[in-house]
Image (cartoon, rainbow, N blue to C red; front, side, top):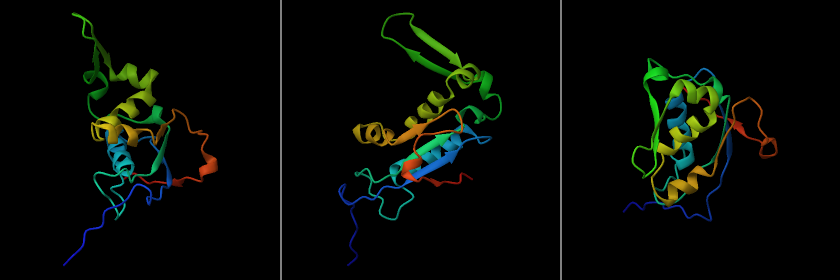
Length: 144
């Protein structure tokens, strides 16, 4: 009989990774960062336990969108009031708030519940190449 290993939240060991998004597609970086935040890169992955690692994403302002997404893709938000639909082109969003665009992309790829919100707190996003987490000795995570 084969036993299935279930991770406990107290026994999870967390590492720190740094990802350089310069010149890489936004969605590809976001999907692989989301997998690390969930812990799917570990053999001890358990779906109902937050067993992921901390991720630092740098150079978000240099991430690219392929095809016509810069002009055709829209970031949409709304309030419950009639006529309060706000749309922003991704060209403007990437120019002004590229860190938010990366955070929003990763958030959409995590579970939409309290576990996903907890996983998102382990993500740090920076526009430039500098970050303030050198004390954690992050390892470089290569994105294909």
